[in-house]
Figure (cartoon, rainbow, N blue to C red):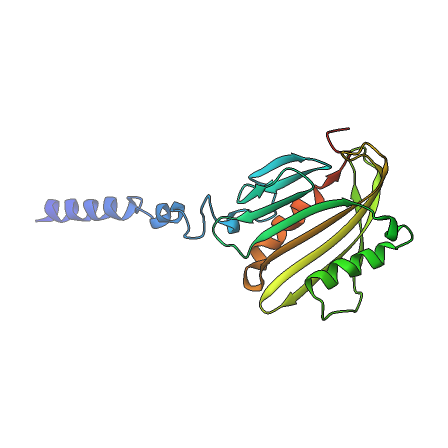
Length: 204
């Protein structure tokens, strides 16, 4: 009986020394939020960006936002949520606006979208054109009826458009998303708007 007892003790010892299988392999399973088509997978807007060369500007945009238009007005819109969009439009400064300040131009844009708001609470920003020249701009975020809107105005002087006459060109940008989705879209809008490079229409 003693040899059998020793064998049983030895087998018990081997069983105790055998590496136990760990459940760590299950941690490599893709998390539910990880998706190639989900904005949440693009934390800072630095991935899956595409470049659009439009008339008067170049901009990088998330692949999730589909551009429509190539002229002086381009709308980028999510094909999964029509409330998510970025509008970039440019126009020649009108002769009646010859002495109008950047602040007034920003206020005009704000009133266009929020006619009941007359207060001016824009913050100064700087945009770099295609030649790395700094351009002054103004930006403001407004939340109303569950929609987060970012308004932005930039002016580039001595810019050529289709008329081939140098002059001030006003760039107006409007980014919108549901307020409860802004945490996902806000960083993408930041990356997009920071990539904007105003330029002459048709190239440099």
